Length: 493
Image (cartoon, rainbow, N blue to C red):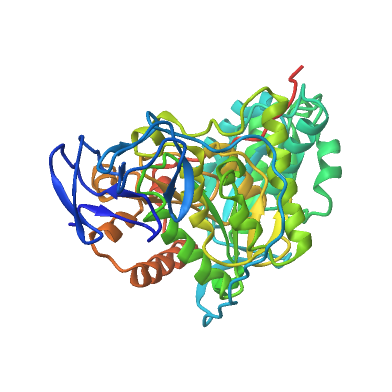
């Protein structure tokens, strides 16, 4: 195994691939470099002397500036590196549009719905309009599972704390999120479960939902029935009878929407797992499919790369608004825009938000940005989309699902059991995590550090994605994990 990796020829740091000890000598750039202190895997080593105040380069871009003079062979991390980021910036559109790729169409077995959308699962979803009925939804789920028949694969209740005592934008975001779930093609049938007196009551929610298929979506107010659980189970029985006749059929990959997400990143995430997901996203969009990149705060410091890949001035301006509106969100709550890497990120080798962001956007591949979506908006244009949502794993992954992602690709260097409402593929950035947490991790991108080929592995990974789309369960699905979290910005009454 190699000692280090240098990502870009202009970089002033390398990444340790194994524990490197003080006093060791390693070969890099046709010379011998003496290591001045112990360096953990995933952490950065100065390749040359870096003057105080000078930019430190990784991925070919600045990830911050030196707080002090950093000698060659020294450990580069939070103790001697600080961010260059501050508040809002002025941006200029300088398009660098990649060549449009074309790939031969590949297929998966999916469920085509009456509205033309394609699901990769055929499940019955129970969606509470308000958190007050969460326990009822759970009881209905448990009592309905023995009724599963035909091609129905599961009955799932999604609990959340909202739907009442919210104001203006928060209330609207809750309604939009729940409406997006109700219309999601992975659900062959949906029970909207209300209480009866909540702000987001069924009548109000129907107005947000718009047109719907009454065979596929049913409504139940718990206050209207002596035994709401038995009534709910009867609704599920009818939905199972309807959805159970649906069958998988060959569908082109262009019908897929992949949500792109990372969590618990480490120093290898931007080298292995995130670029692997980016390569898969490129393969999909080259076949006419869609990938959605979110985690807006983890674009800060790398946003100009995405802006210059926008296919038009209009999309560029929407991207500028996406970035600046999220910075306004931070400052409105008295928070600095660059305080993002978590303790786990830092322990794994990520030092600044630029360091994290430059690795994070690798998940978007190299294609043009075709559209920018507000929270709760569905995908309209095929290709690479940007989506308004925070970095929080549960909130961002839920936002991806609400916008239509049938599968979420989730990269991690630290590991997490979290699973969204749709198949959530966990991709490890390093082999150690893959071997330690085989009950969490579905695919090991760490093999790229062991001389694996990105071209070959990305093709293998894409075939794996098509298998998941055709019914292969992720580990999270096998464990029965399902989580949602709705974005919230304002006051709760």
